[in-house]
Figure 1 (cartoon, rainbow, N blue to C red):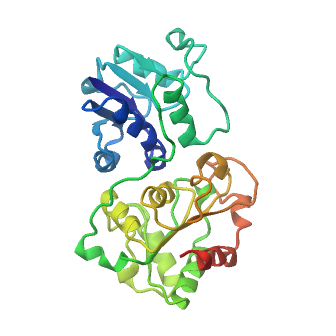
Figure 2: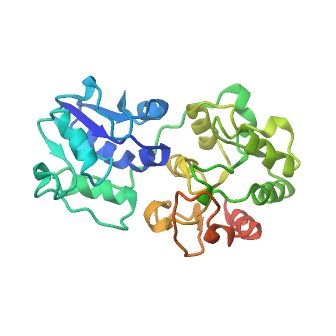
Figure 3: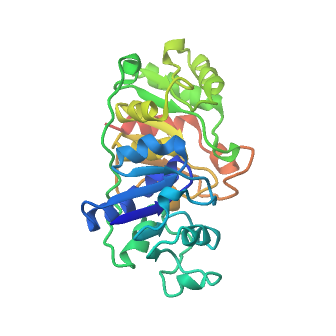
Length: 307
């Protein structure tokens, strides 16, 4: 049996879909579960036990994803993603109902303000495929020798996809200084385009260049750094979801988006959330006022309570 899932989005989007992918694997033992997603995420798709195929947001699915026995649209509510999925000629489509796509009539209904993990598990549950939202864990990747400095360290990750979700670098630096003062080693991570940001934070914290990992890791190496960290501090971004996937204690700073929809699973005391209760545009260019309401002392206080 050939199963294809569509989730051509970012890192956090991929990680919140892991329980749904696990459900597809469990429901069809021995079947190949192919995930259509951006190529940069493929190492983590393999870590999740799926076969990746390159896809772009709302672009046509590649030939390798065509004619599947089952295609699950984990991308969105439609109609655009539904049409992309249907164009791949699956024998069966699982998706949310959308009035503009007649083929989706009678399928589960979309709910606003539903947690992203629960949403995709419910889609499968209501389509006859049991799914457990708690199955977020990924296997721990090995930490390469050149990244041993991160083993047991506090990881400070100042970057985020949009300005609205980026806490000021000076505040991250203050948190890093506090962790050093508490006797913990600290490294600063970031994506390929966040090297300068990581250097800025590290310098502000009085850290040496060896502590700057931003721009020096592949995605799989970054995942390994998070998996071997002592604790993680980040905004509402993919690294926060990596901390959840690897069970590493974390403090996550939320601004324009409610943690009720994108935060760590409720009830896990090793993942702490700071949020002022205000919402706004998550794609804005400047730090959201609610994010700016969070002070470094509040972050350090939460870190002090983590094991």
